[in-house]
Picture 1 (tube, rainbow, N blue to C red):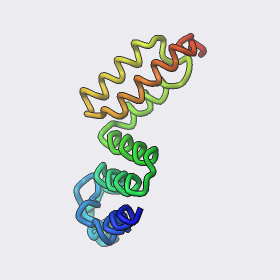
Picture 2: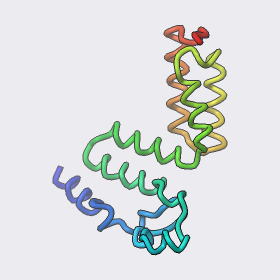
Picture 3: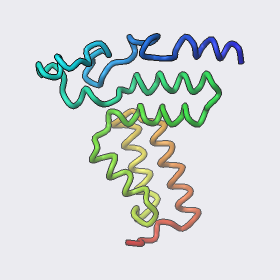
Picture 4: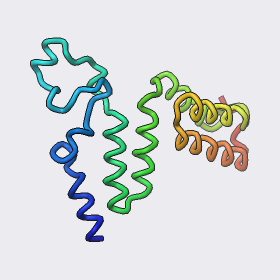
Length: 143
């Protein structure tokens, strides 16, 4: 555990020790996030979101502390940073019990995430859900 502590100390707090990895989705650094830059129009609303790199840094810290499930969640979040809000909402709706009409709908959705978004962890999660929904009979239209 002492080695893990050293690894975490090298990574965290990220705002001090990993500034080069902390950028906005638009590529601005933390030091660029200033009120004068906002007022000058140098930053947009897209610069206020979190980047995949920042989430992967959090993943690394979680892994170093043995928090595997949290690390997996950060990785899935990183994969979703390149997906539109509309597609995320569509996915959310399809994953609600009784919303997807068949297992194949979810398998096709998983394939789309894997191929179009390079999101293998999200795809795997959707495939696991498809298997569980099939076992539990949750493809019956409820609404």
